[in-house]
Length: 133
Image (cartoon, rainbow, N blue to C red):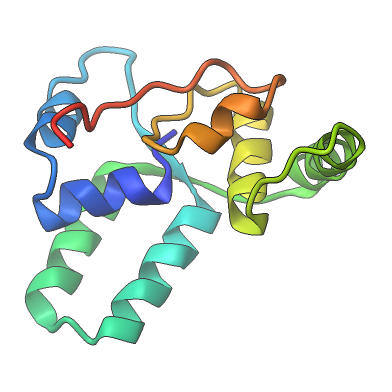
């Protein structure tokens, strides 16, 4: 499951390494994003008014990825995760917490450069495809 920053690096061409890793997925390896990530990226695109080229690049990438819906199962995991992190005195941004809960629910490895996700013990160890940044 790619986080918002990783998708942004790919769309903007900021990380050729992340793009190459995405392009190299084969067989049963599939990339997905949370609908939360889709929402963040659509907001960012609308806010910046980047024009048709960036919007087209984003749409092409979205067509390649599985976009996982948010359901009551993810909401349940989110509630438990947020309470657990608060009790431990750990913080994570609200949207990042939603994405972490979604990755836990999907039993997916989160692809991110954001080290804050490492504090989420219930999450599989995150990986960073943007090793060139």
